[in-house]
Structures are given as structure tokens and as C-alpha cells.
Image 1 (tube, one colour):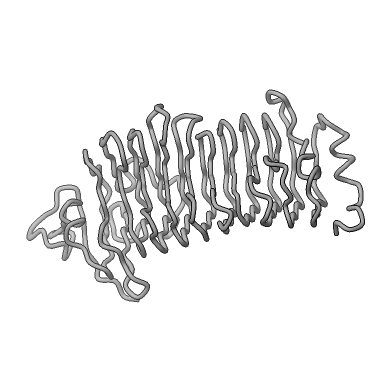
Image 2: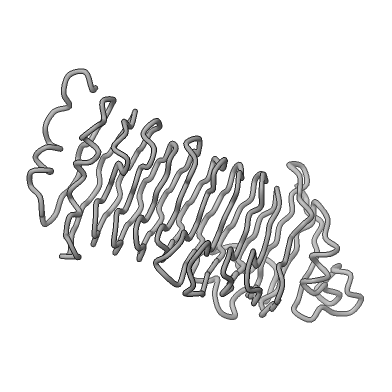
Length: 342
């Protein structure tokens, strides 16, 4: 579709009608005046607020809304949407000093590209709303800078259907709470080439109906679980590093778990864990590398919890294991699947 192009700068300019960079809106003016079908081209600079900024006008399937950052020329960040480019003075910096609730709040059919969100809020930095649909983040940074605990999140979606995050960086400045949370009722969340740092949990999909795909992502520095989900989850081509607890934790057994071509290193608990001991109906674990660098209890290769109560299909093959700490578990994984469990 063809967007209606609008323009936003820190101070605005000219007629303040958003029609060009010379006549740009301020962020406050843009939030009050944009419409479905608009693409808001936001120039690099620091956009400071002290109360919740709500992008209240939802888009539609036919007329979505796009908030697109640029440095000096429209579209100059589009060619290389990598997290390294979205920081400092390279892109719009949205910073908010509000103390609680949400710093920024999105609505359905909105996308945010090449924007850096940051706040020390004791709450959520970017709230994706309640019962919303189709929200995407592309090449964004979302950072929670508080060390406080209790409901602190970088990104939170409540009953959000279809979230797409690509080339993003999410961080929490503590090993408490959850960094990215697909809350109860959310489904169809897709993370691609993202980095998630910190939090007690890096990513949580807390709903048995959640369908989650994680592809080519990096998880680091979690206090309890790097990636946890109740529903169907596929994790591929991803790296997990330096977690005090478990890297992948399946909290509900009624759905599928697929882990392919991942690297696990420096884990304080289990690389892959079935936390409740309930049956997981389908598991496919293949072509992964388990490497332990003498980190705390050094039990990276112990994934026996998956086998204890799984009476359905488990496939574990072609996994590379380095520096074994528990050979009994490795030998158990190499045994054929018993009759009746294929």
C-alpha cells in the first residue's frame, strides 16, 4: 500500500502540519494528529516525555500505521536494519521519565522501525496493549534501565495476536522480572535476529495456546530462564549464554517443543527443561551444540528432565556435546526411543 508520508522532528517546524520535514510535527503533535494509513518519518534526536505516550489511533489491515526512524535522510536506516545501528544519535531516542504504568503504549496494526525506546519506569517500557492485533518492531531497541523489581518489563503484550520482532535489542537492567512477555491469551509471536539481555526470564509465552517461533536470536544474562513457554514453541539457529537457571523451559506439556541448531554455553541449570514434569506430546531436538565453560553447577548437558515423563514422541539426534559433566545423561540420550514412544 502507499502510505501518507508525515514527518516528525524534535522541535517541529514551519506550519507544524507534518507535511514535510520543514513543516514537521513534534512528537506530541504527531501523536494527536496522525491517522490510519500514515507513515510517521521520525528524525534522529532525543524525544523526552514525563507521562505515558499512547499511540492511540490504531491502523487497519488495509491502512496500517508506521513509525519509521531515520538519521538524516528518509529511509537511510532501512537498508541495514541491525541493532547496532539503532542507538545513540543514529536514530530517534524516545525516553520517558514516567514512574509507573507504561512509558509507551501501542495499538493494532502499528509498526515501529529503527526507534530506541528507554525508560527507568517501574512498569513496562513498551506496552503492546490489550486485545490488540498485528504489531511489529523492526530494528528497534527497547531498554528498561531501572534496577527496581516488581512488574518491570521491556515489552509486554496482553492477549496480543501476531507480534513480529526483527533485528531488535531488548534489555533489562537486572536479573528480575521478564524482559519480553507474551502474556496470557497472546499467540503468534515471532522473534527473528533479536538479542534479549537480562531479566529473570528473557522471553515468556505464558499461555498454553501461544504459538511462538524464535529464529537466529541471542539470549544472555538471565537470572532464571532464558526462554520459557507454555504453548507450541520452535527455537532454531539461536545462541544461549550465561544464564543462572535454565536456558529453555517448557512449563506446559500439552504442546510441541522443537529445538534445532542452537548453541548453549555457560548454564547454571538445564539447557532444556520440562519444569513441571508433565507430558510433552512432541519434541524434536536436533543438531544442537552443548558447551559448558565451568559455569556454576556445570549441568549444561543434563536434559534428563525431558525424558522422565514424556510418553509421546521425543526425537533427539545429531547433537554435539562438549566437556561432559554428566555422562549418564548423554548415554541415555543416545539410546533408541523405546517402543511405543515413537
